[in-house]
Image (cartoon, rainbow, N blue to C red; front, top):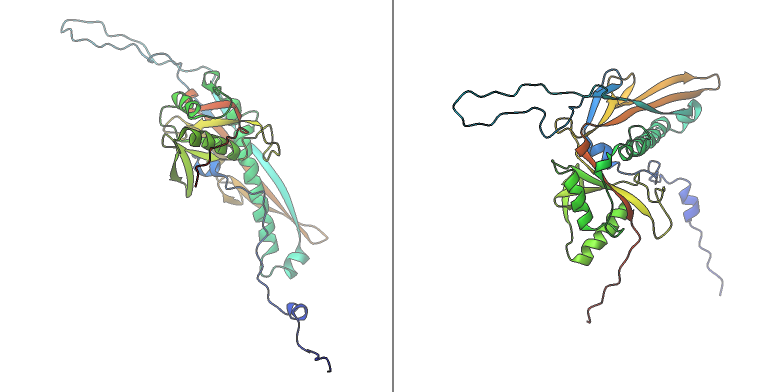
Length: 317
């Protein structure tokens, strides 16, 4: 019996004419950057923000509280200010993107090559901005926690008692905890072990677990043993508790307003020019800093161990 020959258009040949659906470039290193969404920011005109503080005491002035109808001496005085207030100056985070105009002219359908390159560069700058707000040696949150606001965990791992201790340090309207995802997981395990699973809250379009009603916001910029994505099963990190808002004497982010080529808060994108080879060059800059307005606006739980796990007894079927 003769073998039947099938003469039909095959998949490989048809693929050459197919209009396949494509996605924009997917960059796996990008994160939600919740900190820069939730933190209150203030725009500056000249790149400098001075924090004037009162010389603290039990009360800034002696006051009289008396029911004596006779003549009394009312205390006199004035509120003393710090003579050398802290001034915060904006730092610059910049990069340059080069795009061959011949490539962008010919290959910009369905996605504009220049726009996609700039968009990815912008997200990279914002990732660095969040990291600098936390880790910068000058204005970073970790470097600006007052000595009195440091807490050590009782047993290494992050327990509910430890977060309660943080809340005693930032008890005036705390806004959010900030922690590495592995620290949040470690805290969740401790809550499970105690039978007190934390509630969840909605904030800035996201859903977060919370302790005592205060959301625990994840970020990989609070490193574990100095790494964003540690491979080891164990490691140590820090957990911050923040009060944000200028009116609440909290922590605020700073940025330069009114930039040339401003694309978003404190972000500038400017065309530097096109060279003789047809390569377009773009300068991208973010100007940022952060200020801690009051000592009790920020506290840290240090040396938090994230590698403890438990074995649970299985209930018989």
